[in-house]
Each structure stands twice: as structure tokens, then as C-alpha cells.
Image 1 (cartoon, rainbow, N blue to C red):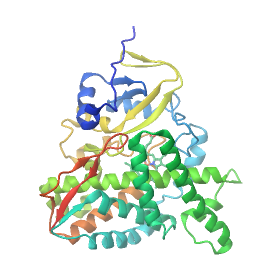
Image 2: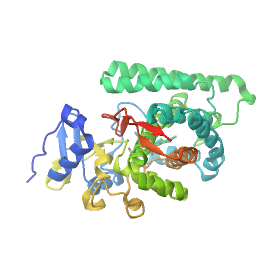
Image 3: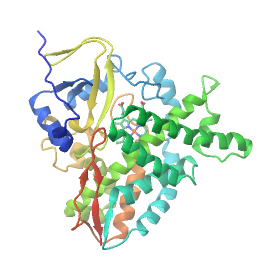
Length: 381
Ligand code: HEM
């Protein structure tokens, strides 16, 4: 016998008003819930099992080709192999001093003793400048910041025509970068964008559409999640002076600390899959072709694994942390994201004696499909 799946609406005002709270209470009531958009998995064990079983839970759930996000084995492996060559430890280490210079400059420009929004004034400029530095796109920072704002507004509006127009505008930004390099020929700068144009798969050059898709997933995903992640981390530091003090004294612990802050309040809420066969989860049956949402933010707070979800325990919780996913699609940009976040927070801690919540403004939560904070007002000492 298959039990019916409880119904919910992830976009209802009460869920959007407190996404984490809603996921917590859903998870306690039932491991999954259904809406017209699909079935959401809330528990750590189910999310991990689905992410690890790409045969049953296909990533081909997106409307358009997305390299490598929407690919399944065996096609995924070849593309992923190519993409991983852009995130080697040596490449991340070579980029680090350049990101540090950017972080120092962003932090130096912040006012002291006045209210600063950590998302708009630290996260967004840092994400965009680190991105353009990495890919060799210097000079288009303002264009990208404008695009980020349009993208956020379009995503929140839920208007498909608007999101499609914003996506098309982003593809044009990417194509202009490719064109610039093609025009430069042998004089093109040695950067990851030029390297992608020269890359081959099975001895063949990549299609322009696939190069654009790869760069779209690096940039669009990177910009939004990096800015949101920095907002989460700065707010956690401002509201946990003991942890802030400990990290000031022991910055070597920053990477693990940041992972744990993002586990508690994951800015990257869900990823989609589609079932390729009927599948049972507990006493519930999902039909073939069911769209499934892996809810990372909920799984990262599952009491069965983490005990109290808000308890900050970096070492204990690290092996179960799902902020960067798990399985074959686990984030290839994790080392880059971690380096940028560590460098940014380190710069902020070094340049200030204190980070506190602003006395004159309240933080504002972000809403689906994003998590974390939309606005993080803090005062730097
Ligand atoms: C705080 C920042 C970030 C977070 C929280 C994050 C999170 C994630 C998660 C949860 C996944 C798994 C998706 C799935 O299973 O369907 C993923 C995949 C991915 N991420 Fe990230 N990510 C971040 C930054 C980045 C950066 C900086 C890049 C590249 C520059 C990047 C590129 C990608 C790509 C290409 C995939 C798809 C991988 C595949 O399908 O094999 N991400 N990310």
C-alpha cells in the first residue's frame, strides 16, 4: 500500500515568510511533500540517496540543455572531467592573491561606524570582481552587477518571459566575451575563457552553445550564490561574537567555520531531478516522471544527523554537510567558492576590530528559489 503524500505550497506566503522554519516543521511531520511543481524531499538520508542515484533520479529535469548540470551518465562524466580541469588546486592557489587584493579593496572602501549592507556592498561587488578577474572579463563589472539585480528581480517575479529575457541578456554578455577572444586570435589573453574556446572533447572543439552553457553555469550560479553566502556568513559573525572572536584569533579555522554557517542557513535551497522509474520513499510511491526537489537547506538541518540544527559544530558536522551537494553533480566550484569566502572574511576580520548588527536597520530574508538574506545591515568597528 502506498500512503498519500502531504500537499504543501512552497511559494505560499507563510512558507516564504520563514523558509527554514517551514522546512523544519515539514521535515518533522513527513519526509516528503507534494505541490503542483513536484515532490520535495526534506530528510538528509533521502536527499543523499537520491543525489547518489542518478539512474533513478535523473538530472535531465531542466527545460534546456545545461552543461553539465542537466546531464546524466555516461554523457555527464566526459563533460565533468573537462570542467574539473578548470578547478585544480594549483589554479585556485594562483588566483588567491588576486582575489585577496580585490577583497582588501572592497573592504577598505566600506564606511566605519555607519550601516553597511553585507550583501549589496560586500557580497555582490566581491563576487563580480572575483569572477571577472578569474575569467578575464575585467571592465564589465557594472554590467554584471546590473544583470544580477535584473536577474534577482525577474526570478522573484516568477514571470517566465522576464526570466527568459534576462537569461538571453546574460548569454549575450558571454558571447561578447567569446567574440573578443576570437577577434584577438593568438593575442587572446591566457584565461579560462580562452582555454574553453580551445578545449576539445573526444578530439572535437566544443559547440558555441555548450561553451555558453558552461560559462553560464559558472557565472550565473557563482554570482548569486557567492553574494548570498557572504551575507549568511557576515550575519552569523555579527550575531555570534564568540565565534567571531575565535576566528579572529584562529583564522585557520575559517573554511570549516564558513561551511558550518552555510549548513545552518543554506543559501542554495534546492536542485531538481526527475524519476526515471517508479520509486518508493518510506511508504510513499513516486510515479515515473515525477519532478523531485532535493531540499539541501532542509537536509542540512535534519535533527537525525545534526542534532539541534542551529548548534554550531564545524568539526562534528563537516562529514554530513550538503552545502555543495553530493554524488556526481557535487559542486565543481567548491574550492573556488571556499577560497573566495575565506579570503573575503579574513580581509573583513583583519580590517576591523568588530562586526555588529546595525542598530538602525533590520536584516531582510531572501525568498525562494534563494535562501539566506537579501539584506544584512551591519556596523564595522
Ligand atoms: C557558495 C557557493 C556555492 C554553492 C552553495 C554551490 C552549491 C552547489 C550544489 C548544491 C550543487 C549540486 C547540484 C545538483 O546536485 O544538482 C552545485 C553544482 C554545481 N556548481 Fe556550485 N555552488 C557554489 C559555487 C559555485 C561556483 C563558484 C561555481 C563555478 C564557478 C559553481 C558551479 C557549479 C556547477 C557547474 C555545478 C553542476 C555540477 C554538475 O552537474 O556536475 N558553483 N553547486
